Image 1 (cartoon, rainbow, N blue to C red):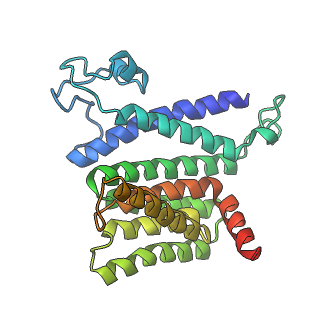
Image 2 (cartoon, rainbow, N blue to C red):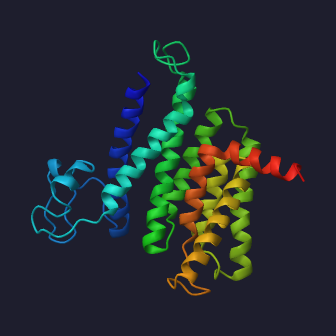
Image 3 (cartoon, rainbow, N blue to C red):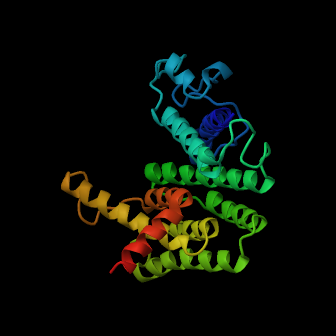
Length: 272
């Protein structure tokens, strides 16, 4: 039975991934979400059977049916990435080892409402972080229209899940202030204002002390990749690299394995 649930999470992730692609493009073009999708090149309206996640891309050989313009690989990749992350989120929330094949779940055939709320909260955070990752990667911008509503949603849902508001508030202040300090000191040269709001969102989403884990991971990954890009001649020292791609990635990793990372780090420190 668990494999059916994992498959459902995967398919749901494909659908949300398709929506994410649509949302990113509509935000960039400042268009409404309720209009039908169209080819950016020829403006031809896309039929529903050409808009099936991943499969349509394969059947169309990666080209628009009307004008034969190539379709960006971003579309199937984001759909697959979202689907995989949703499936992983389910398996972390409901491990196979705790799942009885003879029952619906480890809770005697029923999922607790709190568990499902926790899962869908994670789906929401994953989706938001993917939007931030792609938008910042392509246009070096983190949109307040994404981060600010997400802050409100995540804060409220976490309160419903039993998080202490003091913990969330402290974590949010730490996440936002960390980047606000850099913004003020550098007068906006090191980071943008969007990173401040993203830090606030990460704090509300992860709580204390996991916000520290995410920030450390983000800068660790950023340092390694930046050095690699410079060494490979892709970037020069001082070149801009969108910080949001590392922060969003670190947020998802911490969401999944924050406890393991924190315990490993504390064990490493205490060993010395």
